[in-house]
Image 1 (cartoon, rainbow, N blue to C red):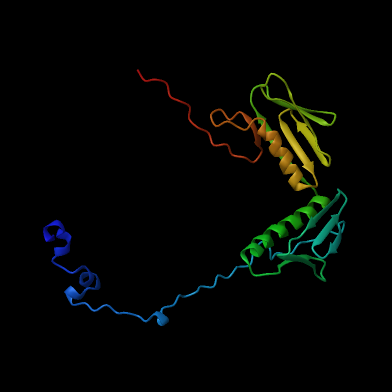
Image 2 (cartoon, one colour):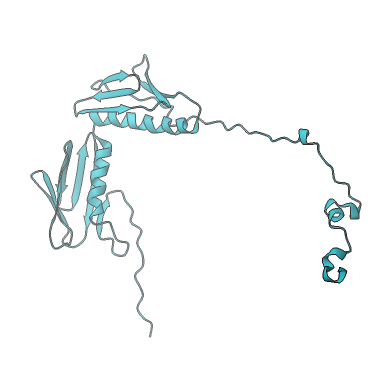
Length: 226
């Protein structure tokens, strides 16, 4: 029987070897009650953007109702609802400040986000925003016909897009499109929809790009060497 199980005749006892007794080492055993875990407290830092005050121009009328703010200016009217993680307060100086209502990770994220969104609606109704796009390509051109933006982008037919309400579109030199309005999110969405028809390709750079966009170019395939 012993010949069939050679593993039972190891020169060193596995238990003793594990505990280190064969080498004269005495392992230190801790009682179960003394073993514990160290808890680390994670502190959420205050957002650098969220703690900045918001200037309110004299031509903007604000309405604050708990977690709701509405801004009315010469260009239009916008409103914003705040989540329970943050709140907005109007100071005696007339400036607005966004504060956190809890010390959580989500509250820290909402702090900077809703400070930026609040500033966007105030700047939008007073000054407005714009987004510029450039058409690059032979035969690429655009024009405004009534309430539609018409673009020739190399397809068999022109692309016709209806201009959303509240936005204004102007074309300069047949290749430069300027989208303007008071709602920054609507401007960005419509500009992204325009660009989606012909994103710039990386070899020749043809397509629709933002004016401040840098298109990374790729080198074309080299010819076969003789």
